[in-house]
Image (cartoon, rainbow, N blue to C red; front, side):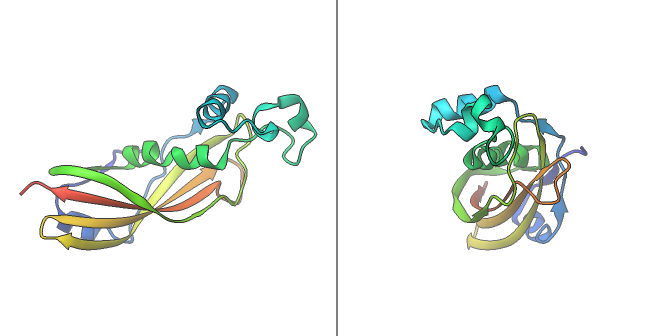
Length: 156
């Protein structure tokens, strides 16, 4: 993985619209991460936590929750970009989110991102839509594609 892209101003971010950044390094999804997510979200569906039953299930093994995969986006994005000279950045929400392929236990995932939109919402602030694509090693389909909406408020 190369160094993260650094944006130091609104103009830097505007210039980055449409430019793909990444990929990140690979991250292995272990059963302990899946089990911890199940405990934290109270989602103990057998396809996630019952290895014996999951062997005969639709995926041949346990799989990560879709929302676990989605929850890795901030981690991956922090490895792909930094935004300097801001007094605050906030997660404003999500637009479209899809989970085209499962993440089986032991799989390796990584991410790419593209700023697909940048709108000035104030003299010192922008709203971004960043498309994150989480890939599964060896899969033709991504595990997750999500458009994240965030706001950055720059120092005055």
